[in-house]
Image 1 (cartoon, helix red, strand yellow):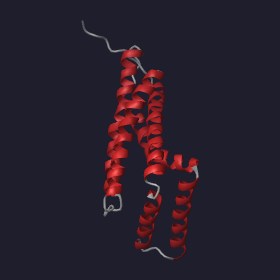
Image 2 (cartoon, rainbow, N blue to C red):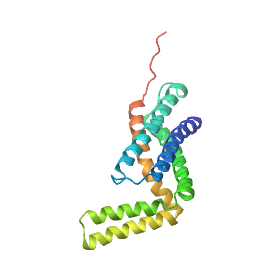
Image 3 (spheres, helix red, strand yellow):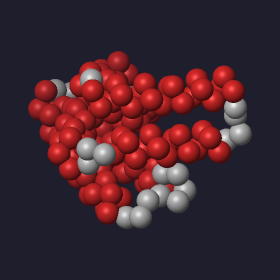
Image 4 (cartoon, rainbow, N blue to C red):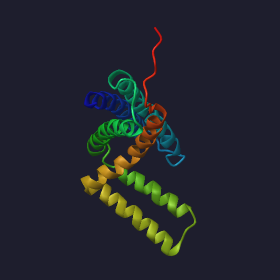
Length: 182
């Protein structure tokens, strides 16, 4: 089981990390995102779904080749979750290198975009102050706390992996092996 987790987690992690690294580099060279980052988010989550398809492949591979053709929902979910954690950890590490060494101004730009969106949203008074304070706090935590940096980054990717893990475990669960025709 460990080999399956490491192999399929690494494949998934390398795919999403490579995609994220290239897309962030391209985005940083551009003139900005006119749609407030929506296009980048759609492309990013689509890439996560493609990379996390290896959760399904890994669970199916384990079920069919190493577990006699059967797997419970719980075991499939655990296997998928571990693959997801390996892939997500590679993503977090890749982003940490890219952010700290190549894009240290990313959070300042992102926060400025969020402030602009909040100011243009029409809220005012105490609600505006609270929203701006939240952006400021999140930005500070992201830049100055490795724990918050990692947690914020995991929260970008891990929920997608958990969703695909849930779907994979439901589809692939099998209590009795399929009889083979000879």
